Length: 163
Image 1 (cartoon, rainbow, N blue to C red):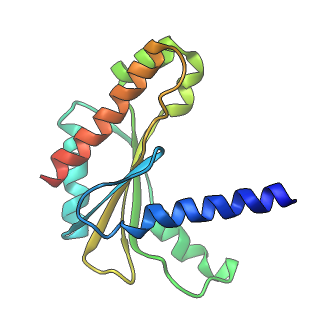
Image 2: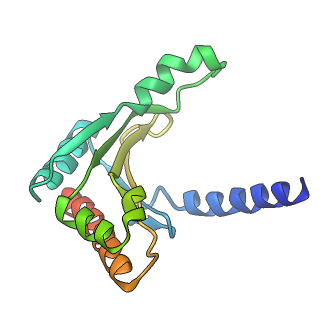
Image 3: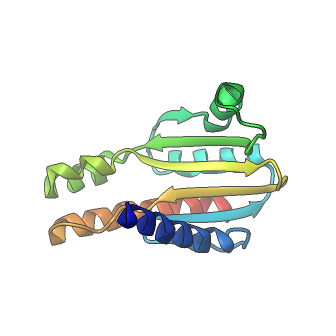
């Protein structure tokens, strides 16, 4: 029990430090994710991300409507506030990068699909956040190289969409 409590405390402090600078324009990075914030229209930002994905010849496989789900289920779970004005996650894969990653290590299937989430907090209107998980660089050199390429792809999509 003590170990669990200690682990939760460490995780809480690590998470707090990541979010503390999230309102800055530049990326807030941790080993596992990158978060960017822009002062822009939510729909325009979504279209920009979708366009940057499509410009690379990649098809979006699905959209998760996280904000709508949380709003819809709020009463059932006893929630008293809406967290997001909007929140959607777009999932997709690059067949070339995914194949290289999984040929390097078939267990790298855990890194597919890639997901970029776009959201606006209810208490921060006009601030649109874009966040995505960075693949951990694990395994053989071929595995690390292909996983880095996925991270570079995600960085490139977001950079192109915001510039």
